[in-house]
Image (cartoon, rainbow, N blue to C red; front, side, top):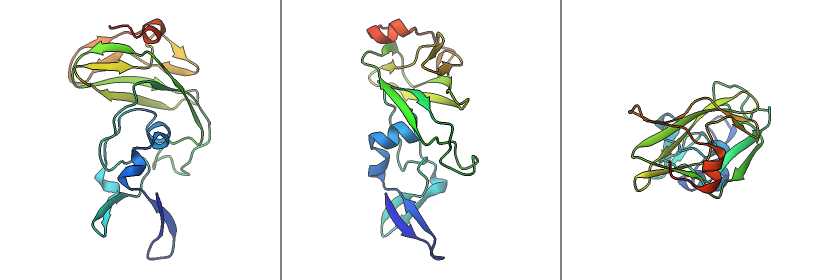
Length: 171
């Protein structure tokens, strides 16, 4: 993250690829979910590419398989929600197991936070399987699942219990 001034003298930040691979960015900005670039927010300077948006990585960022959001604050980082709905404080827990679902592609689950913000946790398969951190049978510390896990582009859906996640059960 680098502080810069634009042509009018306004200060702002630009973000290099290394920033988007930090745990802080992967958890706070992307909720532990995979993230894809949006080139609308990218620019080049002296042969290096940067993003001026914390929510737009320069390259795809993989999901964190063993972390799940459990709480977030009401206050938003951005004054305008059209820019993004990023909360100031987020709390995650480490899930040692994680249920294992066999499959290829991208798996998704819709979630709702304690503040009512909805987002989709997305993960790309690794070696023909997904290791998922959220149960589909209710809520975990204020985070509510709004449906089953679905492998995108297919009709395959999966239900996962908290017990499945804690034991690392293969679904």
